[in-house]
Image (cartoon, rainbow, N blue to C red; front, side, top):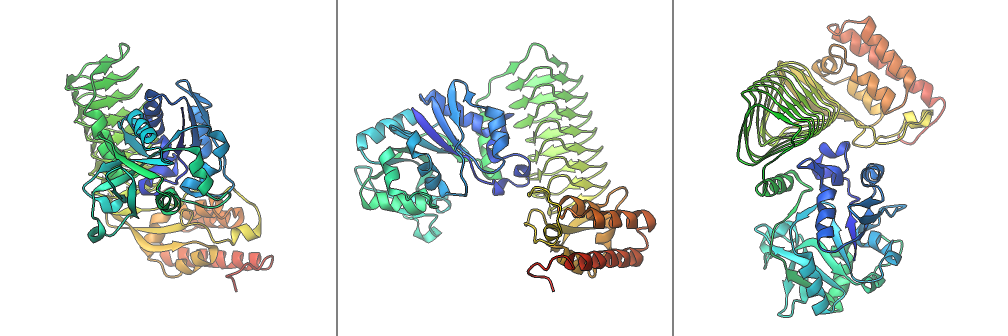
Length: 504
């Protein structure tokens, strides 16, 4: 049997984790979300899967290749976003019989074989797997007749419009003929466009599926899936691991793991391959430590998720938060609950990250700082170009320069961001001096890096590097004046070559 997994989303609800990994590759118990979905499909007889991809597509293809656990994989390409139904229409020649549609962010144990059997009984063009939830207004809500036929379908209705708690899971069994109602080369959505057509033709059915189902495309759903999966863990310890500490409850320990003396691990806990826990560390329930992660002595982890290659120094605390790959955390730091930290961040000694905060990738937080809220730093989205028009372009929101500041120990966002060189120059004239200090702290020069990596202007980037080397950051007025003069001069040079829209 064939299936299609819709895995082309940008994963915006999981940012900053999805800046460096596409959502299907986000680790869940140290395995990609997509691997869990493929395992479930395989268990119900699926042997061919088309994975629709877009964002960071190559990462997914490199990881899974053309075959996974005897499932043949194909990766259709799209010249432009085509919507959930449109991207399946794009590969309609791939389907020669009844097929399954799943979302790339769904973790479930629903009986897909039973869903297929019920679909065959209904003899419609599409059968929706449905579940009952406490917050139906966040989903597509359905009203069914006694035969399982969908009478009404409301996509994310208002709370007072919900007359049922039966919702669309995004798991469908379909006939290829259903795609005849989808126009070619057109953005088309299952819920908003195709289902109303099938409903009108009385060819849309739904059936209640028992079991667990969750959308892991948001932090709350991810944590719910993690806890559900870990609640079913059975202890497993690789024979080549060295465990000196005390273990309680179910603990899964991968290959080459070292657990130091007097360490206490209270399951359910998962330790990835080659993880290292120093002595007198305490690891509490529902903690997942990634492959090759290193945890320093006297640290306390409780409900934390650490991706691969995370390194924590000694005496750290991480509670119910997610730390992405390749992050480093200095001595005596605290990461409170519901924190998401993007990849390649460096938290120096004594940093505190307050409940609910977000750190974008590649951020360096100076020692003994307090972060409360979201700190954004530019992320490269476009390929590098070397021409004046590119330097003067309006960048994406991800590539924008976000002016942060540090006052006392508190690091925060000023509320000002630059999406062009002109905006950057204007903000330099008025932004708080504490922001200039922050972006030029110690051996950091965020301005120079943004100009070089995002605007691709090595000339102005060199000017800013020279300013930092020549002038003390403490001389705020002179630093500001020299940066404004350098930017204004460069703007005039560029405008003599091109006159892009939006510039005088």
